[in-house]
Image (cartoon, rainbow, N blue to C red; front, top):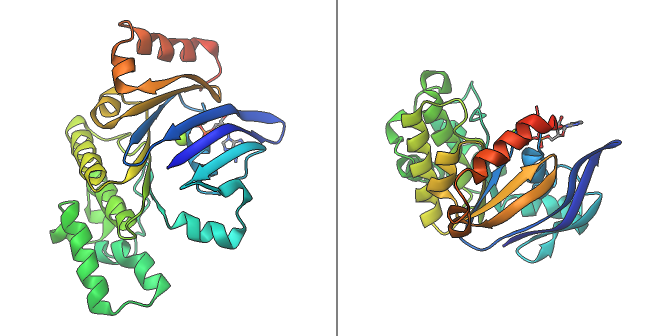
Length: 246
Ligand SMILES: Nc1ncnc2c1ncn2[C@@H]1O[C@H](COP(=O)(O)OP(=O)(O)O)[C@@H](O)[C@H]1O
Ligand SMILES: [Mg+2]
């Protein structure tokens, strides 16, 4: 479904990603673990075509998106839904308008049809009662659920979550992980960036450990669980003492 082959990327003279390769199969969720500044968000930005790789290949559904035109990339991006850390909602629109925004933008649907879809998506994330509320009236966890509903309205093949539980209390994290697992059951592939190990184990099939833009380890959940105790602690500790991350 998604494949990075020997992808490198620099911001000016600063190498950010170094020869990164990984695969996400259909319906799988890949967890990217790594400290702040290790290049996690950069991977998502490359996949969305917001920045261009210096070298390497990025395949989505078998298509090399590093060769895609801007017009093609606009279409390709519609296969992907994205949830950011802060939920990134439009504060002056109601919850319902936020969820339906992209459909209204692109036109071609009757209002009743859009309304029906909005309600369907909100009920999927358990928030149908908030349809007429404003984002400011919602908790952090609810905002991220609304952002997920907004992304799902396109029926994306791939969901990208960039630290969706950071800054939330444990109960709300749990809630968001349940939602991500519900979305997974729809057959959507996903990349989930986090530094919360509990979240990672709850939703992950495969794991990519990133340090200073390089892949330190990758494998399936079973392989990770078979690693000696302290493997992940060491990974996070070395990252902290190497001075590479912030
Ligand atoms: N627009 C930019 N210009 C220059 N450097 C950037 C830019 N965006 C991110 N970086 C740098 O790229 C590195 C990786 O960033 P990022 O992928 O956002 O890390 P992460 O998401 O793992 O915290 C960091 O060192 C960051 O400072
Ligand atoms: Mg980031």
